[in-house]
Image (cartoon, rainbow, N blue to C red; front, side):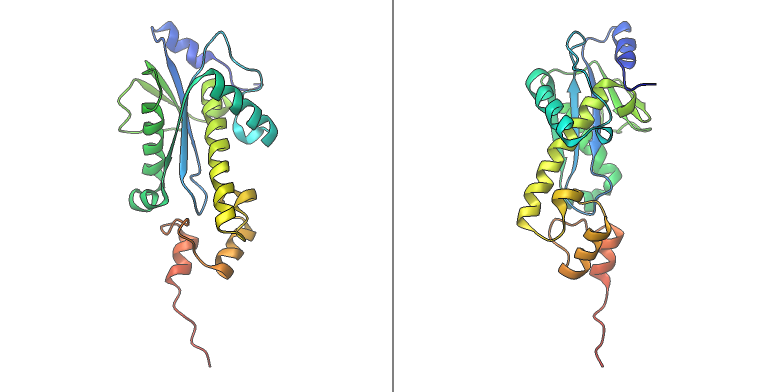
Length: 210
């Protein structure tokens, strides 16, 4: 298989759907920053070349495709905050982001293609979960690109406010450099306190000096 195609969308259209949305999230694994989801409705007659799982594309290609999608498609992006991630847990927070992204579309989808193996329980539309959907459906791939590009921009902005953690390159993921900075510089308001590496630092009792 060379990459994602329009077969899931075509099957839904054959069943009577007129607007098929794809939704994907990014940012479940990082130690900080929001979890972000994007929803996209593509025009079957105007699909750009090169759509693929955002992780398989260069940053330059992602940026170019994101700009095209924002100009030519019905799209929506939603972010769920660190506070809500800590309150809900990351699984439920990522599903909340997906629901918000779908709700933000100008057109109400007839059918939603969701990346993953579970549907968000609050998604009140006909939908199907597609495992590795960003590598199988062009609409989910489009959503993955928008979610990644727009979340990366947030993390680059936060990196300016909290230098030293490398968020402009690691996007908040737990790289060795990020974890080292967390120990040396401490926990920021952007860090997810419910995540183990952050929680462990916050819970460490001061070492008694001799």
